[in-house]
Amino acid sequence: MKLVNIGFGNVIHAERIIAVVSPDSAPIKRMVQEGKDRGTVIDASFGRKTRAVIVMDSDHIVLSYLTVETVSARIGGDEKNDRAEDSNVW
Image (cartoon, rainbow, N blue to C red; front, side, top):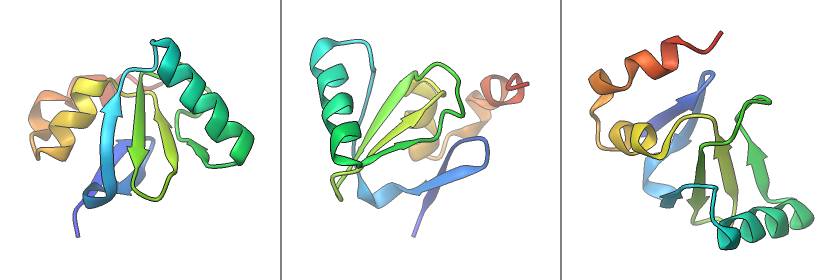
C-alpha cells in the first residue's frame, strides 16, 4: 500500500486515485459542488486555495493546496522536485 502526502501531513492511498485535475474548469467546479452537496468532498487544503482536485474510486473528491504537478510527482515517487512548494506552507 502506497500513501501519498497531499500537504499538511494528509495522506491518501495512491492505488485508489482515479484522477488528479485542476480545479479551474467549469465541469470540475460542478463536480466539486455536487460532491459537497452529497457530502463526499474532503477538503485537505486547510483554507488555502485549492490547486488540485483528486478523484478517488470511492466517489470521494479530495481538495489539495498542492499543484497537480506536485501531486503527480508524489504519486510517481519523485518527491525531490516538490520539496520547495511544501516548505513554503506557513
